[in-house]
Image 1 (cartoon, helix red, strand yellow):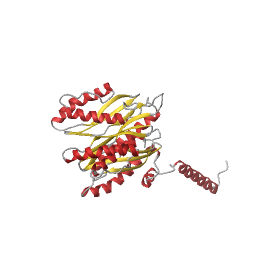
Image 2 (cartoon, helix red, strand yellow):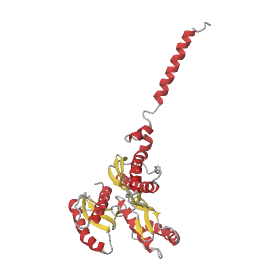
Image 3 (cartoon, one colour):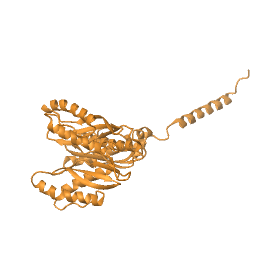
Image 4 (cartoon, one colour):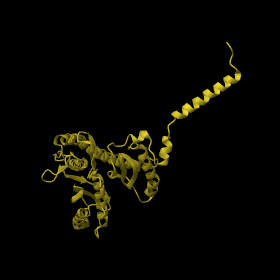
Length: 352
């Protein structure tokens, strides 16, 4: 057999090496997830897969979460079921908090868009802000998921988190799972704790959870010996039902003669003000606000007079304007600001 020429062997070996390199390059991902995150625009495919499905579009505002240094509240902008922008509409401020907020919030915003979920790392040195951010982000995602589930059909299970309700002994917050228009599961993600509260919570919350599923509404009895926890639970449960579209217990078909206009009751997030919380509930029909009411407003002392004078005017203005672009009531600046924030969050849930 004739031996191969040395030059010929070298040429063949070189060609094989080049072919191998070309093959490896062709298998390399077109974009690097790390660089996509750094750019802040393009999302890696794995992250995009974690976004709420169903083509959710528009703004969704999470619940305001109270931390040791102030409230944190996240608003998401969604497009096609993906988070395209995250921002903190409330964050701790004043003194040292200003520096911590300015350093941590932009990083948390970027992380939320990159992860497409609330499973993000806390920013070093901003533990409380990070924890509050993640909770509010999760509640916004829950709302987006509920909205997507309602668009896809009532047979899909939806997880909806109610507002955190402050009680004399600590916050109460309820999360429910709704399927086929019924509550299939209820749980308290926040409840009073510490000292005597631990015993009361462990005895009352399981009974309240069971009652919520059985009743399918917030019309449940208070547990004896747990009056404050029961009242907070019912308020948070009602806000979760308000957020659950088409079959969560508060949406109705409206109109006569078989009309298909849908009436929905939506409760905005609690907005903390210098004089107390403000929370707005609206009724929407045919894409218009037909009723607005403040389910929470500053009270006690001078606040009673200010609230009674300003809230009816704010309610009337909300219905007339059909949006949160309403004028503040003179002499009630803080109440007006809180009202508009909570009203906007209710409108976000309604998709407008």
